[in-house]
Every structure is written in C-alpha cells, then in structure tokens.
Length: 521
Image (cartoon, helix red, strand yellow):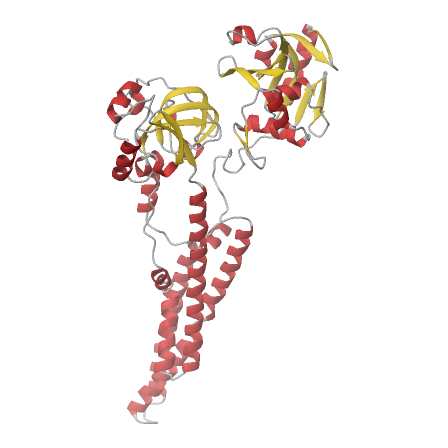
C-alpha cells in the first residue's frame, strides 16, 4: 500500500478513494476501476508451453551424455540398436516428467478456482454478491464469520470481529479487530488491528470495510511477486545426479583415452597407422557407450513417479519429480504448529455438569442447559452438507452436539436468537437471548472465573438451588483439573426470563445466572 490507511480516518479514505460507506460505488464506476486496476487476482508466471516443458527435460547433464552416447553408438560404432534403445529411454524419461508436471499444474489450477469465492459488497446502496475477482478499490465489503477476506481493507465498522491471519503474519490465534485509527507512524503488519488482508479468514463476528488494495497490490500480492521473481534451485537429487554424470563422464573419457593410447603403442607396426587409429577409436567409443549407465535416468524417473503417485493418494501435490526425493531426505521441519501441522480444529473432550465430570462419549440430552448454552451462545455457520464455519472453539461445540445426534439446526430454528451481547475481551463472556416457548432463554458462555462472578444459582439433576461457596470451589477445582490436562475450558450458564430486554447489555443480561456446567476442549 502506498498510503498508511491504518493511520487515516474513514472519512479521509472515503474522500481519497471517491466512495461512500453508505452507498458504495456505482456499477459504472466499478466497471471503470476494474478496467483500470485489473481483476482482483494474483498474477503468476507465464506458463511454459508443453513443447518447452518437453525441451526442459533434456537439460539434465546425464541426459545430454546419453544423447551423445547414442549418437556415437550409431554414427561411429554403427550400433543403431543400442542408439535406438538409449533414445527410447531418454524420450520415456522426458514424457514421464512432462506428464507429471502437467498433472500437478492442473491440480494447482483447480485449487486456485476453488479459492476464488464470492463476496458481499454494497454498490449503489444495495447489497450484491459478486465474484471476488470483480472487487475494486473503493468497494464497500461486508464480512461475517466463515468469509475469506477478498482484498486488503480498512475496517469501518466491526462487531466482535476476529480474523485468522496465520498465513500472512504467522500469528496462530485469531486476531481481534476494530475500526479505531492507529496514530503511530509505522505499525507492523501484525499490529494493524483496523486492517484486514486478502486471503485471511474471518472466524468470528461481522464487519464492513473499504477496499484499499486488490490483486498484486495486496500484502499477499507482494509475497506472490517475490515468489514469481525467485530463482529456481535444483533439488539435492538433481545436483547429485548432475555431479555423478560429470564424474562418470570424466572417468570414462580418461579411461577411453588411456585405452586408445595403450592400444596405439602396443599394436604399433602390426597394421597400417590409419586403420589402427580408426580401430582403436572405435574400441574407445564402444567402451564409453558400454560404461555409460543409460538405465539410470529411467530407473530414477520410474521410482520418483511411483513416489509421486503414493503422495497423490495422500492428497499431496508434487510439481516436479525430483522434489519427491527432497521430501524423503528431510530430517527436520521447523514450523509453527497451530493450523500448519495441526488442522486448527478443537474437539470437546470433557463436560462437567450435575457436579460430575463426563467424557465426550457419554450421552447428554438436547434439553440439558449446558448443551443448550453451547448451541445457542454460538455464532457458528452450518453450511449445506454439515460443514462448520467459524471460530474453532465454537465449531467444536456444535460438532460435539452433532456427535450426540442432536438436531442442532432444528433447535436453532425453534429457539431463534432475538438479542445478543457479543464477546468482549475485557469481560470474557458472550450471551444470547433466544425464544423459549412463550419465554426467553438467556445462554451465556465464557471464562469460568468471570462467569462465576455473575452466577447466583446452580442446576443439579434438573433442580435449581442457590449456589454455595463450596460448590463454587468445586467448580473451580474441576476447571483447574481440566486445564492441567491441556484442555481449554469454558463456563456455561443460563436463565429464563419473561421478556426480551429493552437494553441488552452485560449489566442486565449477564446477571443472576444459573450455572449449567463446564466444557473442556
């Protein structure tokens, strides 16, 4: 970005980009900017033609030696059968390499198509869903949990927004965002909390923002530029084969020269000089052709191709065959764990309710207040097919409900949300107010210690009674026990009220609660 948008007020950015937060761009203006700025996609290196890829396969030193050997076999030694066999081996090696590269390119292109989602934008005062490639600077984009951020944006409005930026900044946990101006002169990328960047993921909350960078002008576009300009380096296997080819060639040529010289001296005078030179040259060439391991490239290629197919079965794409050996020769991988070596997913392991600790396999009823709090105080989006989008903590709770064969979508429809108090990092709680027959069910989840400060009662086996200090100590002990087992623990509470709140804030929604349980993930 040329401008430090994180240090500018929204009104300044609206003026600079000639846009409006309330109405967005007009369709005509968006089309003009798309023609000027180009599509919102990352440029890649110009693809080499199939012919050029085929030619590239012959740039290996060992392959060049084999081609020379084939020519010498046919022209000098008149061994056309050997020459034909060598050339067939070389051609098969090249064809296998081209096929593998073409398959990998096709798979990568398919992945690129999958990673081009639609985005919701405000244009001409209306909300439209358009391909993310059509987004232009000045567009007003609406984000919610589960969305992929389509471009670099300056946030204008946020509601408990969290964005997972590990691919860009290395930060493994979702980053809380807001729309406040940052006054510092030079803020590091990971600290620009009023900005969101292309190809990062919204895990929680909602937001609106102004697009300030698209395509190669985004932060991830800068990375793509560096990758496109990077020099290709040979793999260890290719370097070793090249070195082997050079060593063998030097040794074979040296031996052939020695044989030629020795033959010339030992047979001097036994036959005419011209005929002797030709005969000894043919002997030396025949020796060279015989000594060159023409089967080596073919064997290596076949083994690498088999390795590539094995990796493909495990959904790993290998573009070039020699890279298989590089992966196999790796001893140590240094990597951030969360979302890289793990799937960035959480799983419910323990649930504490009715003053007892239960394993995740034990059956829990859908009307259990702890289960209802897990489902209702939750912003997870359930897509067709049961795919869950949202914060890993919240999706784990919904997945636990699915595993218990609870009809989550039916429950969410029946007990629909009417009000909410979004999560706040200071109070560490989230609450929702839901329909509950002719009354309303208040579901609360959050940090156990903060939750207990607002709890006045406890439910045990369906009976609600005032909570005692000893019961609070027991709950905190269970919380500590689960935490010591490397579990992330959330507290669950609820209450039933006669009507929705005129002013749904923490001061009235999250007071006089009934403790329902704890969940450890």
